[in-house]
Length: 461
Image (cartoon, rainbow, N blue to C red; front, top):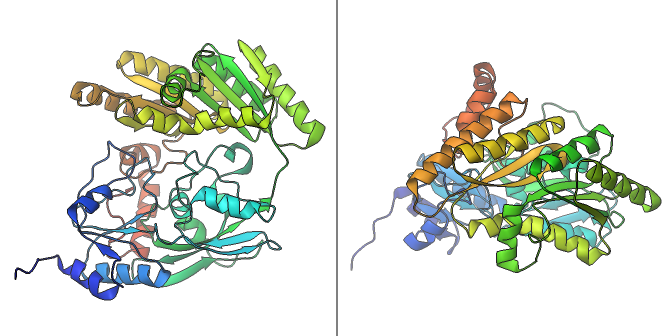
């Protein structure tokens, strides 16, 4: 009988965990090798481990520490920067089976969840008690809270309610020494010591493996008022965004979807949106009663003043949800057209029209199809660069366009990533955005919490 030879760390993991937790079939490994950032490099991991508890996750890190094997934390694999991509000789730690909502405290307005809980599932559970978890990335039907925390995910309503960081009270993590620790608090206020819990938010698995998250909740909102404006150009739509900001309005969502996205959604779901507009700007107000109607009316007036060819309030909730469903479906619809390189720049809101114009110009100069999605209300733009399958020259042009978009965002006072994270795709952008002194400070933190360098090495820095 032939004995199958495995890497020592795989044998150690098999011995430390219950049966079925460790996977090493090559076909299975390939399905966990990368996230949704198709262009980022990746390798086949040695194993995929799916713990069901914090203690099992700790056992994974300790086994990897003993064998100096890299640990790559992974949620649902919906990331768009390569942050969950496997590296050579690594072990992917998937939290997909850590899916319990452990507690909802309605009086304190908080929830305690395992990292594998899907964002929309948490929101639905909270809604049963008249509560609301605001962060809502477009991937909310699929992405997990652990992944949202790791990337500090934003979403459609962050223009008014903030991003994931604003809702994380505490976390339980396994650090680079294999220690299972609790950081943060459950109270509404707390300033004891350094904010180590906040440090974990957006750290992309480089400082610890998240095994539990405590998030604060808000009371459920009244129904939103939804408005839509159709425009002939993204620049005109950008002017409407800038005008709404200048007027002091704070919509609960302000989203931009261009014709390329609309056509992709139509081709997939036959929603009929592309026949009516080149660009759609979607606004929402959750102010109660007459105040919501007034805010919606103000947005419509700014749409029209910026050149909207059509602007109206959604007639009913079903129509409103259909419009926002198209926004959420845009990215997967575009993936059907070919490999997509996803940008995630954020610029000052007043610079949105200028940045959208520059993106259009870059697409023309590099002969690259660029679709535009945006959380326009907070200046977070998602240009999506699409290339034909197998067309290497087109891929090279798109990569050059990608780098120029980063440069233009920085030139306008922006940042290279608003919510997707640095991962692998934005490492050069981070070096351009931040000074050597600041990068050295961040690397020092990484070294302090992960002295042996096993936690998602090669990502971010």
